[in-house]
Length: 335
Image 1 (tube, rainbow, N blue to C red):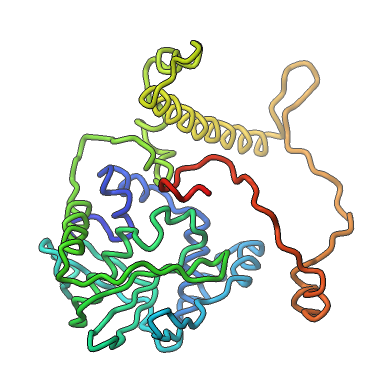
Image 2: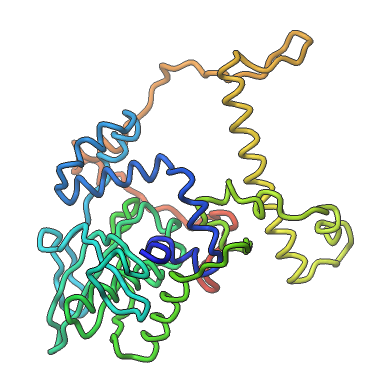
């Protein structure tokens, strides 16, 4: 493979270093996700991957539901058992499907896909499993899903494709628009895929809101040490009505970088304290992990709902809208 993997395209389009930084270490969530994907696909390696999880990770994974069968507004029914699963796909430098992964520009492993005939057209439906909607900020419009869709559709001689997400925490599908492979809008997406996959800026680190979606940001010198003079960057905050769009964005990015930096400092200090029985202040006190006593009664709502659904349904209520805090979302999607 000559370029970045399809899973890295959403961040590679903004920063060529991000995919490389993300390879430094894999999160426990990624290990957990790999185990779930393998088990869903019936991969013989699934049991071995599950065995590598902690009891807590295994219990959480066991609560996840595999993608449900779905009937779309078009009348198409997609059944999980009928899907092609865990398939390697690749695109060349022209954005065309190729079976030669070694010489391909970008390679990916899609989770599941179907080929369906709709109104005389051959359409590929490509689904990807994500833990939460926040792990894929662009939803079904993610470049990762478009790359999967274009590679799978072209490989199977389809006229169009539809990208979709199965969200584990919500146990529901999100589907994007049908994309005709010969439409100008789709060809523009192909250009973005090729550009992102081939982004080879070896020297530049490009910071911005996209850093929040970068798994490697904790290893990034540009993100962790964003400015040499933070006082000047934060100066507008000290003056009434001094903030404007540009200075507010700069201050926000600095604040988010500082959050990550302080988390890394805290994680390292906690690890040191655990290894050494705490950090002493030299005056009789130590900074150490403290545990709350267990044994308090707790109502297991999930178990009750599973074992007594008839009774549980009588007490189900619906929550009211509430603030979820501030985060990066598409304009118009913040409620």
